[in-house]
Image (cartoon, rainbow, N blue to C red):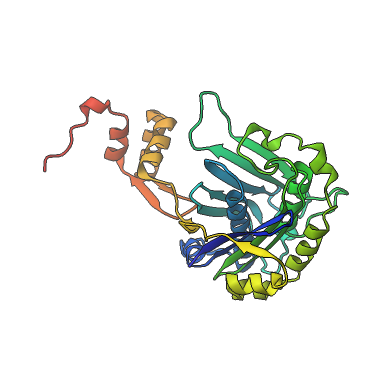
Amino acid sequence: MSELHTFIFEGLPVRGVIVRLTDDWQQVLSRGHNYPAVVEQMLGEMTAAAVLMHSNIKWNGSLILQVMGSEKKDESPVKLAVVEVKSDLTFRTTAKLVHAVKGDESFHQLINASNRARCAITLDPEMKFQGQQAYQSVVPLWGDHGEPLASFALAIEHYMLQSEQLDTKMVLAADSNAAVGILIQRIPIKGENNLAGTRATFERSSTEDEDAIGQSEDFNRIALLTQSIKREELLSLSVDDILHRLFWNEPIARYAPAHPAPRFQCTCSRERVASTIRSLGQTEAERMIEETEGIQVSCDFCGQTYRFDGIDAAMLFMPAESVVPPKI
């Protein structure tokens, strides 16, 4: 069963979150995507990271994590990877491949071979005020000196350090059975100066927090402990065993596990697809019907297929008052 736990280190300016996605992650992979194992690993790590990040903020809406590769098809096999997590920790994820995967590619080779890939973090409000836009930050997948970042965890750490001025340690692992992640973060000196749900989210952080980067001996020690866990341990051990293995000698205080727990859930629907078809216009919809004898749309996230024949499509463009419900 999937689970998420938050914890603090009593008396220390450090907090943590751990997530373990099991049955829900397996449900994602059972939707007919047939991703190669290395792509499953990358998507699983991204999903665990997105759940960790959303659980660590106060935000009524979606957190969308996107990694965008090069536009050139001959550079990296993965063109796009997307994870969306909502306030109730429901999530969905997908990836678009543009050519075959060998199976031994690193994260850098999968999506950033040209060192031009970018990571976008978007906070999309559930209820928007008039004129309100989603908050987005786009960061490159390379370090301060142009060096490619070797893992997605390093990309998030680099983002948090550069954009939010917060020391962060993230450890991620995933395979076909589980997606697991640990987030350790230095508590800001003033307020919640990380991914908070306000316009200040992507503005410059306070001078005090910037000056404190790398100066907390407690954070540095705990981050070093966190980094010591092996991938195999992260994937095979329970949450209790992981926390004991890492922090048995630290003053850790755990909160009740997240309820409801993180779970897979897609937001696609026939109504949403119908709205998209309407936006194309009646002429375009009729052309598609003539060419393919119907309109068929498959969701990239869950694989659900929606079909509209000529009658279905025609009804989409009829005035509401002219649509007579069938007699029962």
